[in-house]
Each structure stands twice: as C-alpha cells, then as structure tokens.
Length: 322
Ligand code: SAM
Ligand code: SF4
Image 1 (cartoon, rainbow, N blue to C red):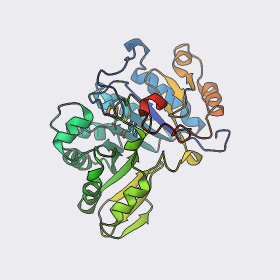
Image 2 (image 1 turned 90 degrees about the vertical axis):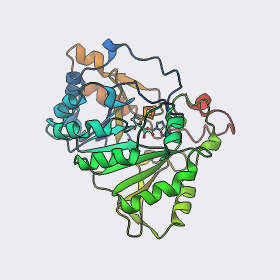
Image 3 (image 1 turned 120 degrees about the vertical axis):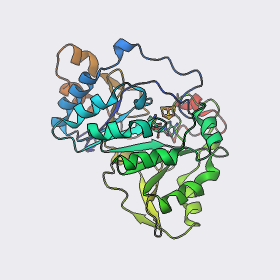
Image 4 (image 1 turned 45 degrees about the horizontal axis):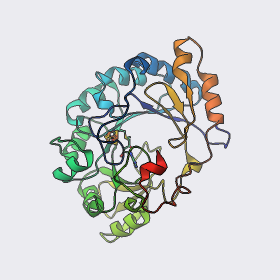
C-alpha cells in the first residue's frame, strides 16, 4: 500500500531500452543513448526481484521495453516468472512485428496474454509512424497471438490528430468481427517527440462520440484480467470491445496500482516522475530489496502533472515532457 492507500500489485518490467521501431511519439529516429550491457539486468536478476516483491503484494507482471521481443530467448524469463508462486497474471507489451513467429514459444513458456501496439491498419502509414520498413499486418499478428492461446489480446492505438485519427472508425469496426479489445490512448508528453505538439492530442470524449455514431455503444466491464486504466465499451453485437485510456483529459492516478522496473534495475513509481530507487546494486550486493521497494512506494506521487504542463500551445511535447 502506498502513502495514499493505493494497493500496488502490478509491476511492469522493462527488459530492454532498445527497439526495432522508432515510433514518432516514443523515440527519436537516431535512437536513444542505449544502456551499457553490464548495467542491464539478466533474467535471473529480474526473476529474483519479482520473487522478492511477491510477498509484498505484487501479483501481476507485464514484460515490456523498449521492444521486449528483441531480447533473445525471452521465453526463458517468461517461464521463470510464471514459476513464481503468487503471480496471477503474466502479460507482454509488444509492437507485434515478431509476434506471429514468437507467440507459440511464449505461450508454451507460460505467458498469459499480450497487448499489442498498432497505430494504423495501413501498411504505408505503419511504416511512416514506426519509421521502419517492416512488412507487417497487425490484424494477422493479433490473430496469431489468439491462435497460440494468448488471450485476451488488447490492441493499443495512440491517436495523433492529422496522422492516424481518420482510422478511429476502422479500428472500432475491427472489434465487431474479431474478439479484439482496441484501446485508444491519448498521446502523452514522453519520449523524443520532436514532430508532435499538443494539437496532435485527440481527446477520448471525441473518440467515443465518433465511435458512437457507428452503432449503439454500451459501457462494459472490459476483458477479463484487466488491470489498467482503460474504460471499456462495446458496439452492439460486437465480438470485442473498445477502450479509452485518458492520461491527458481525465487522470486516473487515483487508482494507479503500478510501478515499473527499468532495464537497468531502477524502480520507478510514476511514468512521469524522475524519482527512482536502484534495486540492481542492492541485489548484486546480496542485500534484500524489500526495504528499498517500500521506501520507493513512500515517494510515489499522488498524480502526474501533464495537464498543468499544457500551456504551451504549439510547443513540441518533447520540450515540456522530456
Ligand atoms: N514496444 C512495446 C509496444 O510498443 O507496445 C512496449 C513498450 S511501449 C513504450 C508501451 C506502450 O506505450 C505502447 O502501447 C505505446 O503505444 C505506448 N506509448 C509510448 N509512447 C507513448 C506516448 N507518447 N503517448 C501515449 N502512449 C505511448
Ligand atoms: Fe518501440 Fe514501443 Fe516505443 Fe514504438 S512505442 S518506439 S514500438 S518502444
């Protein structure tokens, strides 16, 4: 429990800072200053951190990045995490490019489900947003995950006005015939986003208004094993659902149940705060990490301040968000 009474039970584990994409909203084209290899946690270290955090109440794990599927033999980590008593849900976030190839091995190792990013259904546009030249069909990739037994599959769409917001209806229609859960995420000021401004943010109320014109839209509980901030709806008769995640227009910090472990072993209690606690050095020194975890929770902020930063009009988000 943190100082504001929030029950912290969800740990996001970044296994690499690297990526095979350079999404407009996340990474500059030249990449980042990558972490030196010796600083990155190995699989046994990650599993040991998780083992020590489960008795404190962590129950759900998500493997993320960077792009986690580029880390070799990720199924080894998946099986180590799955073997920990007390883990109720093990999921993965991916851009999906390698999903068709890797989903069966990940499922065999014990992965429960995946969240896949897909910001467009149009091949040229996918290349433009990711700034990479992959031939890749996100709907087929999601289908491969389902076929491998990874369910539910959630699709994350970061909307950018004038770039992909004309695909809102296409993504929403996808949920009619496919048991997919499409979540529209409001663009946030993180990463190196030189080309994006506050004017690119598409408020979720606008998204729901447009989707509501496609058919009757009812509020629903959302897919099983949900643990995030999305609010879900379903078009009448649809196989899947539509969610909105609204970090910019309606903060959900009051129900935040998560902390994140960076690839180099720092625990961060807020995506937008600078505060972190170094678990790696304690682990490598053979010291317990529980006291550090508890001290980090004591610093977890009540909320982020993205909204109060929203004063710059056309200022690039990267200038205000880092
Ligand atoms: N590479 C994986 C992927 O793309 O799913 C996992 C890491 S990625 C950083 C995790 C999620 O953060 C993705 O759904 C991505 O769309 C989202 N994300 C990254 N930058 C964002 C931003 N500036 N605004 C909103 N969502 C963002
Ligand atoms: Fe890579 Fe995911 Fe960031 Fe895109 S959002 S650059 S796929 S880490």
